Image (cartoon, rainbow, N blue to C red; front, side, top):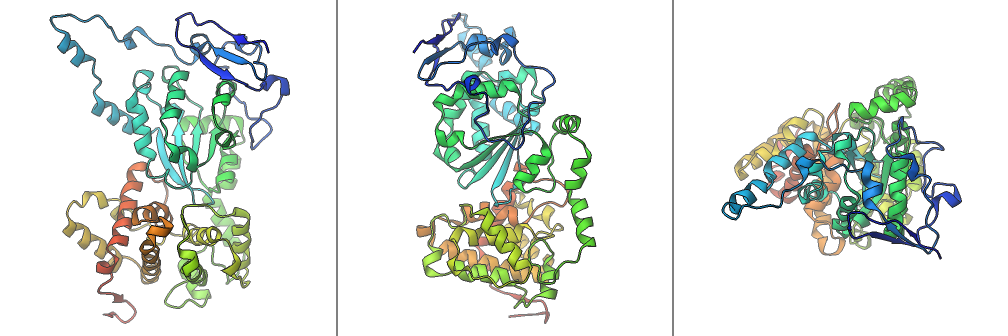
Length: 491
């Protein structure tokens, strides 16, 4: 097989790819897509001559000319070149001046908010968004500090199944990373990042992005390749993730509105959904997507516990089920979950004894996530995200008890207490199911509390998870003196 080779003028070590399939020979995109057409870039990001290059033959070897191909991807200015000439009499000072201010760089990364937690998808999996338009300049991007910042921002989510949505539009020329940096970053990610990533959505992909992926394909595992999905619009992404609203930077939204009819956003908005719902007759048996008060008023709820919650908890508490490894960490079959939800909302009786454990676990999470208002209420959101500011045990104990005992509505209090007690049983079997209080907090935190109008940021999800973790670890103390709000007394 004849080799496809380009010489590297800078004498850098070539990047070799073996057995790359020819994208141009087949004439089709090998990755799943949510639409037939998704390349809406107004201007190409590379020289047209790159497209005319011969694709590598199957089984051949590609010597990749990074200097030539990545010229459009990386332009290093003179200011970014580290001068290597040191003064023998003053080299220590010079070395000190060359060291980056790590704290300042991390502070700038945090300010840019280029990586965000934006909620959970229809399977209850956390979604991490990365915005190319907010990436730092290349001098700060191509560093170990950046990779470490990304890893630390995501590490609490990657222990469970998770989703990444990468928004490519708006990337600035001085923020384009080198290909070597991208490859090094991929290698830095440990097994949890790669194994537990369920889907990687690339939103508004350009031809250049596809070409980069084409050259990286031979050295990326088949499992990882299958996770990539190109998405051409925000509406398609919302539908795929099961989101009613999606908050993105103005640059991304403006581009999307430019290529799609902006009225499509109105049809998918939460406000429109509620308006249309108010005009429909909701069956009194409905348990998903309504308020907790609606369920209590229309269903036989013993101690304010909705029937479906009690069914799920009873099943998951069985001795041969509760020990299932990763009982709440893995996603259930979405089609089956949807079928069960529809049956329950129509008042049909369902038998969970023959259902997959992860389906039942996901059904419980779906119920909490789809409540019209979060179980811990919008009103308490600001109080809960302040958890990290309570530095002493005395403060935490006092404030957590006050929030749960005095500020939480009665029906919410009873259901939350029921859920916490059940999760306590899960924790007791952590040696078998691998679900510690921290793992459960990460899974249930976003399903128990969220803000009314905005998305949770990474700065807020941390305190929320810490709050739930604290409750799980200290539930005996918190509920030692229980409150019977109906009678106004104590148990």
